[in-house]
Length: 357
Ligand code: COI
Image (cartoon, rainbow, N blue to C red):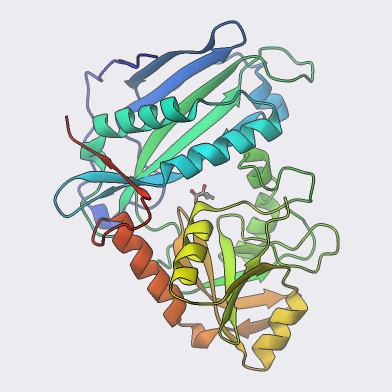
């Protein structure tokens, strides 16, 4: 399928202070759009000026949460070129999310071409400042304009982009996380593994409560026993206990993070012991009390590697690694960002270069 390109007649001023971009606040000049219906399949792929869209107020996305999304980044190399990190993994996950929500599947090859074509057009928006990148947000919505609860027939897929800095204001400084004991994010058989808007909407109440108490976000517990830690919502979590890295196993209620997957591979290749399993809060608190919990950190596309300096549960808190980033989190951050920004060779074939045409 051909991608039609309509360039904006009024390009926006690019941010002058790349050290204070924040996250997801500024948008580039264009957006990618394509539509789906059962008769034509995906059609009318186009890149058009960024702007508001018009939809029927009866659309399924507004009433029944028919929405999935992804997050990935375009990075500026020292030689001026631009590259993506594991876009194939995001496309694969988006199709898994689409399957769960009965939204139409994307053609992986065409979706990669769409990302490449879009980033190639917007490449002057990729920041030059270390640590800043162009955050890409592909999303897919159900657009059937009627109120019956039904599987989706019509859909729209879009990509927008935002030059962004750190997700957490703390940057690489440790964040304080509260373990949530009332609300739950997901249960097995639900949509926890899918990247759908509803999971995030359902997490807002607990997030607001945590923020009011001075925490950055919540760490979710499993929805059945309320005993095992799952994920933070904006990132997966990893703990180093007695020299071994443990991370919650993916049993359907945890998002299979691309950064999570990459970190596991890196640590295994460094010869570290990494185990994916159930981890109870009790185990964490006991390990912390006995001085065996050496490090904790989150992994995510937006958050990259975010050290956790304090965990709190039902009013009891413990500080981790003296509230400092630990050696494993630092090594992961360095290795990952070196590969992402092209400062190091990529032995894994994770990088897709976008060449200026
Ligand atoms: C990402 O890390 O890309 C996400 O989608 C998480 C979101 C809360 C910003």
